[in-house]
Image 1 (cartoon, rainbow, N blue to C red):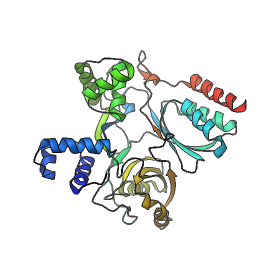
Image 2: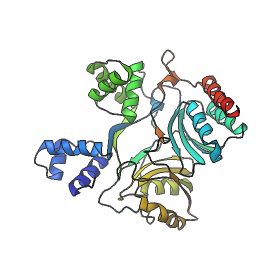
Image 3: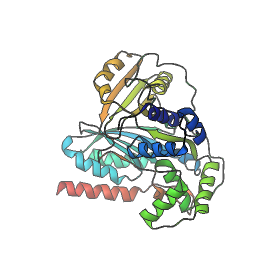
Image 4: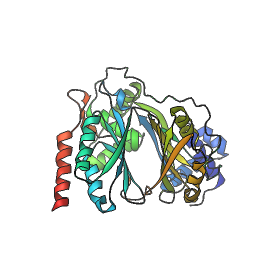
Length: 360
């Protein structure tokens, strides 16, 4: 669908501040009737521009057991693509899997309390001669920057090393809350599906046959937010209809302050969506923008050397079946012991089954 100026303004406003009231949006957009705003939101969601709202979920605040983010750049021969993809799915603490267009690299994002066991599983594949990989570990937050629909489709590569004021690290756990199964499931909904109690009820009933009363879900959300687990509510706003945009990953290396300033400033004021984080001196930028950007972006980034080194990897679009995203796996939380665990034996056995089928 072609966007009107008021629709562009609406998308920019809720992308900047998901807490805008209905009244504030009506005033900003000069809509005379609330039904106009409701119908516009519905149309834009149906067209794939709006997802959410969601919350960023701090799994480190669930219990005393720390949880790490592990990003793995997994390289392999294109002939091994299916085997590698199925094997990564066996490590079922993954949350994102992004294949590159060339079909020789997967970027997988895991959330785990045991980095050594996760690396042992990846080493099983490396010892089989199927993959090579490089991993990055951190406990840093992810940040989202939504598109400015009045801005250029081309991200600027000048004036990108401005001072920034963001808190990378999550705060420490400050509560003694005991979690139940419903709490973990609600955390998942808040992270990747919806913050609406009615929608959570509907999805649980249709997907799992479970009926949760409104007060149960409301109580669970209250527990989660008061414990500091659900923070920074946000929409995911696509700059173009999903499947029609250009997806790429930037890996930025250099001095940690330069990297942080770059990943925070890149794409500001442009019609571009990005999610970013850091691990040590490496910055990660997942971006969605116009397909026009691809051919010229790296030329512009080359001019930033030697201050930073940037690698750009084109990714398969979000409409592709091998591009996957889900929430954390609640099975990795032991409700009896109230701690995160790791299912090493189960994952290893599943990977070995994939390897056996490969060799048949």
